[in-house]
Length: 303
Ligand SMILES: [Zn+2]
Image 1 (cartoon, protein in one colour):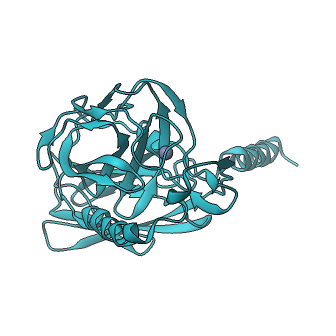
Image 2: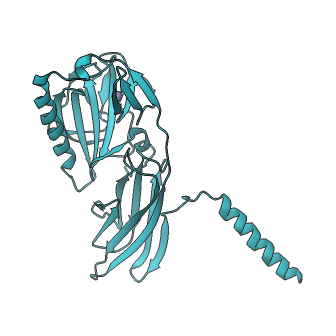
Image 3: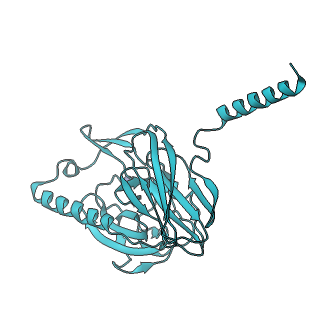
């Protein structure tokens, strides 16, 4: 065998080894390509690819009229383009099934043509912890006079998540909304009073009663309500289908309909609703997808 043949075989072997050790999702949906209309660059940003995580997809291209993505049966619109760049947010729901998921991105060009790109997103399995808790029995079997209230509140909150602001209202990275000890208990499987099972749809920050609760990012206050389970609650719309939720407040300081800036005080930590002590329950929803707020902290946004 000639030396040059051996070298080629060694290179093939080394490349093969490298491919085996590169994580399957590494850059799985990043792409740069040249077209008649200029360079197209699609990049992704995320902390992990398992249930409850959020993904930011950015698109850079000199000339296009609009762009959208299709993922898990839902259509996502990119934010209005600014200087040839835009982004959208995708959510892997708390109950997302592990496996390969298709992501399709369509870009409408100013010429009337549509460019289509497809990506594979490998959603990994994730084991959420189990916790036993004791609460007042009225939060397990609500009194009959409360049932109608609970149904109405569910409908009210769902209608908030169905509202959609097609532009981004946030400013820079998200912040943790309160000081105190953070429990990374998103997705925890909970067994209340040894009988009732539920999932924990946020993270808890233990603080002293009255501690400040800040807006995790800029946005519009779309709901202020005393909810049976969540207590005094504030919901902020950040645009593009993303909402942050602040529960169990002792006092609400924000006003429904007003625009708040990142870091503005929206209320005080309390223990209203189904709680075992004063804390802030911080949740994030992307449309109807339940997202781990801590995965949001990983994303960068232009300021
Ligand atoms: Zn909680």
